[in-house]
Image (cartoon, rainbow, N blue to C red; front, side):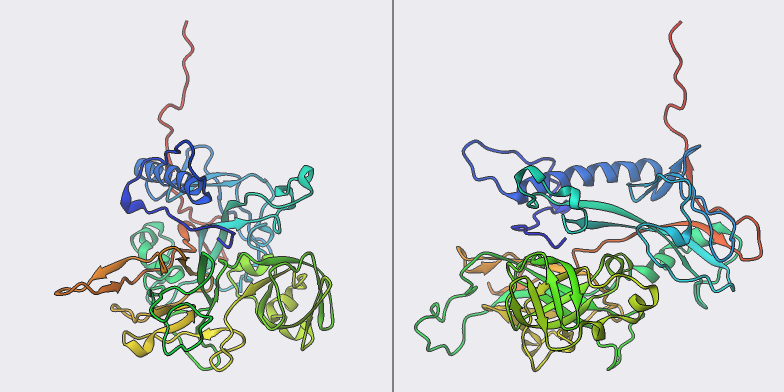
Length: 451
């Protein structure tokens, strides 16, 4: 979630049951957000324990897949639960090609069969995505933000090791392998640390033995920009990341674009000679990266670039005739010698030379996977809170055996977490597809009035 947050403190392993406010204390966003996360974790775990990983209520189960018609199929109205998350389809006329939260999905090529499945994840929504969040009575500023449950009906033809049959039982038995195709187990492993300033003779800087040397508390965001699938790596498709000291929260709405210029809603937080990401909602919903462009100049509410904006427009956007860009976001990487199209290539290693410097003494290291290659996915991210008072970052450490030297722990991405459920097997030559949905009976499906 790219918001202006102090930090994300929820940790299910601590088994906290609630947050207790105290009188006369400072109120922070992290406390309120953790309370919401505690409650959501409880409710979703309870639902999963009661009905299983995915199921819908008998008589009201949603997302029924209809027969294929002219390269499209209907998606039934109703409710479905995936890993305890409530998924709702409120409309009667939704089809595969007309999904609000999955614009311009891949075409069905007519060969089949397809496994139709539900991809469920939470998207961070700000006033940029939903203008109703603004409070007009206060002049229209954004206040709190929201998260939205995104439910996308997708299709997959499988591969040589996962061949589709008409039997949904076979799909269920191999469900972990299917889900592993879309959300791999090894999505990256990161370590973070702070190191003393080296060889500094500048009297204006903090003492050389300091650790975090920033002058403000920050929430650093390390985010995968361009990932890969199935461990594939090449010079033309390098796996890269980008970083922000403000959790990627500096973003503005694009009002219009022409040539080398963008007219934006606000310029606060932007400055010349930084990298900005141009994107739209459709790209975010499809899990695609935006385009990183060097900002040359700011003139009033206009951003001026060195090249024509259209040359950075992705082919998928052109093919779908989508409005682009609709938003511009600031990122802070600036090492010209290492950047690929504005982003930093990922190199894995465990040696001292494999640490990557971010800024102000903060360093990160991408650690090789022990059980096969990592499959980095666009949008996955890590958060690193940096605090002036301690001169350190908030990152878990292990104590090395035999001495007291702390060692930074490896951490998997915080998100984006996707959840999956099978819906149907779609055969192009059948009028009705085998239904792979599970159902549950309500605990009380009748109400007897007293006589």
